[in-house]
Image 1: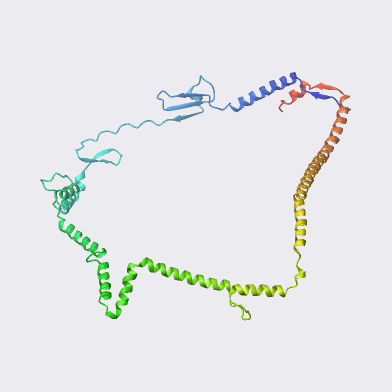
Image 2: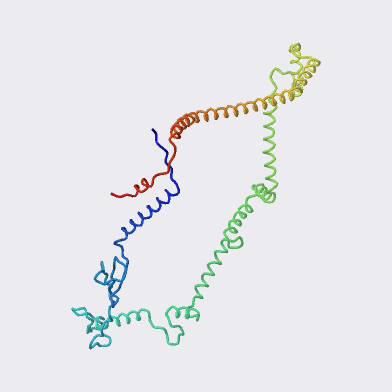
Amino acid sequence: MAGKLQFMTINNLQEFLNLHNVQIDAKISNATANSIKTISQSDDGYIVYFYTKPAPVTVDEAVFTITLPQPLTKADKVKNAVAGHLAGLDKDGNLVDSGKAVTDFDEAGAADSAKAEVLGVIGTIPADATAKTVVDYIKEAVTAGSYDDSQVKADIAANKGAIDTLNGTGDGSVKKAVADAVAKIVADAPEAYDTLKEISDWITNHTSDAAGMNSQIKTNKDDIAALKTLIGTLPETAKSKDIVSYIAEYVSDALANSDLAQYAKKEDLEACVGRVKALEDKIPTLEAADTSNTEAINAVKERVTTAEGKIKALEDDLAAEKPKIAKHTTDIAALQGLVGDGYEAIPSEKIKALFETE
């Protein structure tokens, strides 16, 4: 016999909660049995006592104590101290007068000697100066004009003027000297070289004209060479003496030596053009029909793909549900076997047994 199914009632839950709280309280009490519950201090406040029981308590019941450090007292005055002497420590660590002053560590007035040497190098500021430091005195002397740099400034100005003259274009400049020398050579040339001077003068006065002529000459030369390349040369067998006549000669010979039967007549060409035009007019209609058919085919493909996806999903769902259906069938059979024995609340003894200790 399978036995009855047991279920928990509200009373069962309340009983379980009460027993659980008792168990928790006991564990908390055991865990905190040795915890510090009370603290006290000695009368002077430098000893702290710790107890594991609530007050009232006595110092003898303290589980441990802590002694706090006391503040240090102020050092005693040094007896028989002399003003200016340095403080020292005796063998017991007490403050005493060392019997030494700072001046005792200045070897034979070394500090005064060093000061005198520095002042000897720097010098002293005149009594009539208003400056109090060496740097300020230097500024004061420069401002008052004690330092005369007029000659240096004059030399610099003279050198700058000479350099500006050399770099210029007037008298005394390098450019002027070279130009004058070239002009003298041309002007003083023998009579036989008058043409050279005239050409030089013309080029000097007509710079843009000469450049334009040179450019035009080069352009004409290039155009003639290009034209020769384009036209070519007449064949040696040609009867004509110019290009126009040769073209007429060539066309006449070509027509005389050609089989004109291989060429279509005008009316045949016009008829062919008409047929081509009729076919071309039908092309937009055919293209539209092709586009429509393509769109319809694509739409059918999309619907087929969607339907296939849904069928696959249904097949997957069915495969997943088959084991569940089988399990449900088994569970139902098991429940049907239990229902015949009925149900009952969990006995109190079983709940209490959960909290029993050995």
